Image 1 (cartoon, rainbow, N blue to C red):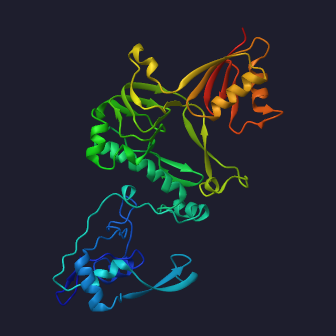
Image 2 (image 1 turned 120 degrees about the horizontal axis):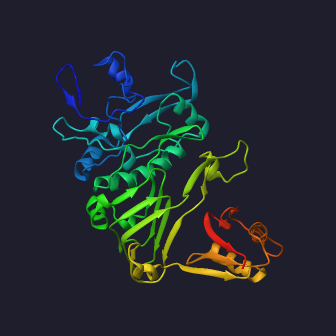
Image 3 (image 1 turned 45 degrees about the vertical axis):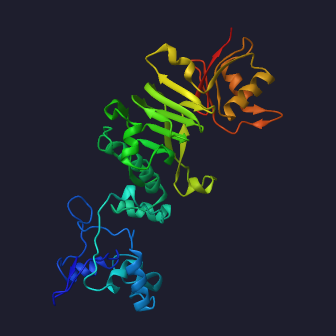
Amino acid sequence: RLEHSDGRCMTVNVEYNQIDALLKATVEPRGDVAAPDGYSPWPGSINQLLFELEPYAQTLAATGGKMPEFVNPKYTDGTKTAFKAPTRLECMMQDYPKSLPAEAKVGFTIVKGTTTFSPVKNNLVEARKKSAQGEPTHSAASGEADVYATACEMMQAVGVPFGVPPSEMRSGVSVSDWPRVVVDPTFGVTVAEWKQKLPTPSCICLAPASTLMLQGELTGLRIEELKLDGTLVVKLCAGANLTIRSLSEKNAGWNFSPLEEGANEVEELTIRGYKVVKKGMRELVYDTPGDYVIDDRSPASAGSFGTLKLGISGFGRIGRLVCRAACEKEGADVVAVNDPFCDVEYAAYLFKYDSTHGKYKGTVDVDKASCTLLVDGKKIKFFAK
């Protein structure tokens, strides 16, 4: 709310690069300085605007569509002695209230940025500089972290307990490390809808650095009790109704690993500076309509899984191709392999390099101590009997 010396008042957004000069000219001689918590004490403008159409049409007719303009210089740094880009003459829709009559009603609401607007506009070099200065980075890393934060804040709003997320450096960019929760919109978009899906929120616990992915047609998903320390992926097709009555899962999970300098990676990874390493997970896939229940406390629910569990006897050419097909497609998990003529290390080599079909596209590792193949993070117990 701005108050003029002659008594006029106006509620209006203030552009981020104008707030400093405005404060110095009015109520704060130091300008837009950080509070003890490191953030600006003044409400930020995210420029999400709602206009009533009838007054808007009347204003357009009266003004001919003209909006106030301002000069927007782009300086290289805080000294404001050099430009990093040509200065722009701009007009902004957040200045629309300046065109309204004095009796017009204008208001604002303050909400968390993670649930409304998380810009991704700075490259990795700029993001690292801003992170070192304690400023918001508005980068690929922060945007991704805010996706996870949004889902966690929705869960928190319905009563799921969370601690204060720690800060973590991802390729030189500081982010808040909430559990990595990704939920398709079919789960619900309002707090009321999430309450229906999570009826006992106090019985849901996500350990730090855990990953929860809920994908597909989730209108029939209901989670009553979940204890997760690692990675859980749930995929439902249309017509599949799943009640997770009780599920407890602990595995190696998925981790973030920085890229090596100069690494030849796809663009969506290079703009972040890191990649996901899948070490372990539990995946529940329901690709057939029906009613399913998961209850880890009850042996009777063991047959309710939508993913077929496979064991392969013999790891020759055919056995390895079957294993490849199962690992590359959804709906089947290879959990055990038996071949008395092959040890686990040689089996991993043969699986990874096929003279006809080429190198396996995913990751292939060996846990020799437990005689286990690790394919894309999934454990395959290897027997030689």
